[in-house]
Image 1 (cartoon, rainbow, N blue to C red):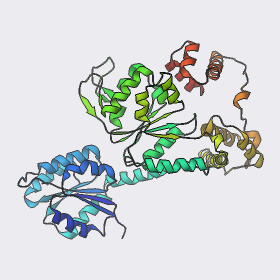
Image 2 (image 1 turned 90 degrees about the horizontal axis):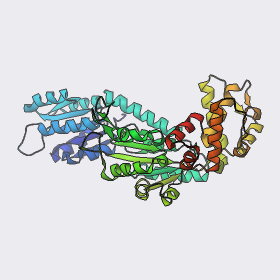
Image 3 (image 1 turned 180 degrees about the vertical axis):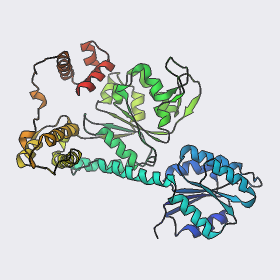
Image 4 (image 1 turned 120 degrees about the vertical axis):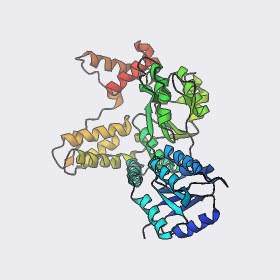
Length: 448
């Protein structure tokens, strides 16, 4: 018999709990029991559940059913699709019906009939939207996990071992690495392996948020708090409650805004713009940057106390040129994907193309390789991808292209200044006479 996943049973009668464990053992993979609902929120968060069997009454001598309805509401707040079956005495059937209206899937009357109880719980676990959502979430998690290519290099295998250890914790993680190494993909892998995988990871590009909207985007706002605030709106922290919040390009956050971020992380609560009421938040924080935050902290460009908060675990993704054994396997994965995407017959790299890809320094890392493969697949007319299809350019070979538009001139000027300043965006913005935000937007526009 195929079992129906995990069931959580909450009842203050230990005799009932023991009897149900024996009865349900053949039908569920894991049976967890609680004699008090006090630890219910924490227990729900620790695993993935297919159904909850919840007693309506807990306090001795008080049989109003209000406690059961209260905990039903608490479950539905956190996990609206999770099936909850109510356990109630015959006299409280009216309350059980009220519970159905408030989101319960079904109810079971004590004393119960074994066959009816098993049937009700199995139906709740297997034939509800929550179950379908669970299957979809599991498939999505598997897809997310398989999209992360670890490769065969020792340095990536070491990284994989560390990720598997820390993913199941709630420790804050800082991911560093050059542009194009796959920092967001690694963050999604960590989320997919975590206990928070039931909810979607929320991703925020810190470099793309304007300073004037920083608080509203991250912390939310109340209706009327500023001109365009036509309704209450939760920020990214609230949306990521009980999930993972990924802050990309954290090194681009201006210094004076770093204190506001630090306050939210320390207090584990936020205050919406236009409100004075703290809103508690429960998030797992993952940050990423291609900059050296320790050096920035030494120069007074990044708050040292914020660095300590976000850097509980530091994961460094190596550049692609530092693990050449992964270049061809990655290229072949991209070839397979783009052949399917563009409706092409399977293609293979010829020997000259393999050698050319292996010798290229890939300063744009996996992203550069991906774009190179996509272009080659599109223009290929044969059954092999030849070396001539890959027009790869080394960083120190960047020619001064003839400019025909103002945009071409602007792109070249930004590129030259970036090289001159070693990628220090503050220095580049200062030399060009523009704000960091404008510089960042232009870099994204031109793919720099």
